[in-house]
Length: 535
Image (cartoon, rainbow, N blue to C red):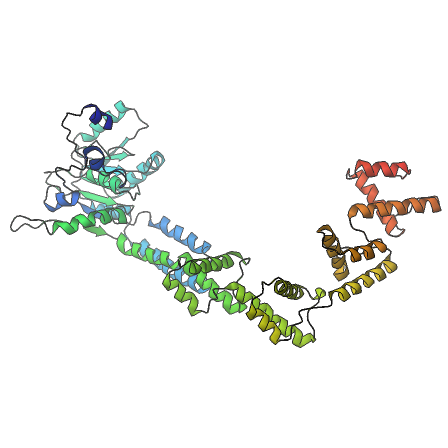
C-alpha cells in the first residue's frame, strides 16, 4: 500500500478499516499511511451505544472447564507447597469440581439460551485438527438440544472454488439450522449476512481477532439481537473489555438526542463467571513465591537454620530474595513477610556465627582447639588464621575469636613432624606407604603430594620425605615395585606368588592390566625384558 501512495503523490487517498491498529497495538495504520489524519472514527462501543449495531447476548458456558480443573490439579501436585496449603487448595478444587458438575453442560446451555429462531450459526475453531474433532462433538450438542442441523466446513485446506460453493449453500434459506465451522476464515474481509449466532471455540487474547469474530454476527439494521456462545472465555477475559473501557467512559460525556438511552454492555448470562473467579483464587493460592515462603517456614522450624545455596530449590530461592533485597527490587510486602520470621539477609554472617558457636562448644567439651583430624571445624579454624594473616578478617570477627581465647599461631612444624614420625612407623610395620583413603595419615600423605605439585612444600620437608623413599606419584610407585621385583628374582631365582605380600599382589595387578589391555607399551617392554611371565 505504501508503494501505491508514494507512486501517486497527487492522488487523494481515503482509507477505511474496521481494525486500524495492527497487529495488536504495534502499528497504527492511520499514522503509518495517512500521517495521522483521521476524518471520522466510529468504535464498536459507539455503534452499540447509538443502536447502529445490535448488542449481542453473551452466553458464557462452562465447556472445557473440566480440563482447566485437571490442569490446576496437576499444578497443585507439582507445586511443592506445604502440606497445610496443599490440603486447603485441594478442598477448594474439589468444591469447584462439584459446582462444575452441577452447572449446565453444552447441550443444556444451547437448549436454554440459543433461540429456536436461529438459522445461521458460525463456529470458530482453533485449527484444522480442532475443527475435525469439534464438528461431530458440536453436532451432537445441537442434536441433543433438539436442533435439526446441516453442518458445513470452510478452511484453507480446501480449494477456493470448493469454499465458495460451501458458502453459497450455507447462505441458502432452510427450515434446518445451517452450522458453518471455520478456521482462520470469515474473520477478516469476508462477511456472510444473515448470521444469527456465533460459537467461540478458539481461545484468544487478541482484541482484533475477537472483534473480527464478533463482527460476523453484527448486521446494521438486521432488527434482531444475535447470540454469542462464548465457550472459551474470550469476551470475559482481559483483552476486549480493557481496550473498550476508555471508549465506554467517554460515551457518557458525548452529546446524545434528548431522551436517548444508549447501550453500553452485553447482556450476559450463563454460569462461567462465578466458577472462574474461584479458579483465579486457586491460582493465587499456588503462586510460587508464597509456596516457597511456606517451605522456608517449615525448614526453619525443623532445622532451626536457614538453607544454604547448595540445599536445592529452597536454598536458591533464598539466595534470590537476598539478591533482590540488596538491589532494592524486593517487593515491600515480601520483605515484611520475610522479616516477620527473622530471615537473615546476610547469609555469610549467619554461617560464620554458626561455625563460631560450634567452635565454642568444641573447646568447652574437649579443652583444646580443633586439629586436622577433627574435620571441617579444623578447616574453618585454618581459614580464619589465613584470612587474618592476609588482612581479610574483619575486626569484629577477630575480637569475637579473641574473647574465647582462640590460638592464632599453632605449632604447625611440630604437628608436621608428628605426622612424619607416624609415617615412618607405618612404613616399618607394613613395608609400604598408606593410601590416601587410609585415615588421617593417608590424607596427610596426599596433602604432601599436593603441596609439592603446587610448589608449596618447603625444601627441608621435601628432603626429609625423600630420605624415607616417599612415593610422590603412581609412576614412581611402579618403578619402586619393579626394582623390588628385579631384586626378588635375582635373589630367589623365581617370581613372587600372588600371596607373597605386597609385591605378589603387585605382580597380579600387572598380569590383570596386561589381559585387559590397560598396560602401556613401555611397562610391557620393561617386564618382558626381565622375562616376567605376563600370562
